[in-house]
Amino acid sequence: MLFKVDLTMDCADAGRMAEFYKLAMGYVDEPPPAPFATREEWLAQFDDDEEDGGGGAWLHDPTGVAPRLCLLEVPEPKTAKNRLHIDLRVARGGTPEQRWAAITAEADRLVAAGASRLAEFTGHHIVLADPEGNEFCLGGQSTVD
Image (tube, rainbow, N blue to C red):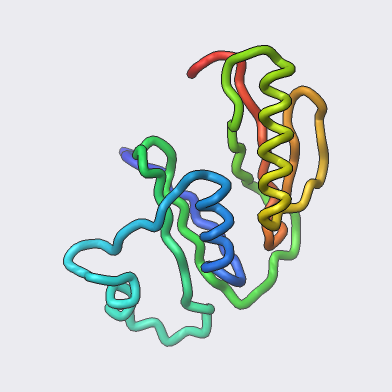
């Protein structure tokens, strides 16, 4: 039975992507599993001779509500549209105009941090790409889930 969902994203530069998603999602670095003091120490236990990039970053929601985000470095570049993407709900409650203002303000903040604006569906959501081209959406909701 499922007890938790993690999102794992391949990338070229896990450090850069981690900084972007910490800013975009309010996530923080996840500490290494016990008894390891560092992620490097934890990773050293895996005898991985493959040339798969090897770097990574592990982030989590400090409130414990949203899924963990694992960013794994791989040698191959992104080649197509994402089959799965992240939706970030950045505006809740208020009038439709207030929600849209919050969504557009957040899009501007993330573009300044390295995202690219791909499409806008006025009043509903904005499609962005992170610094490596992975699509995600910014939107809101009118009521609390």
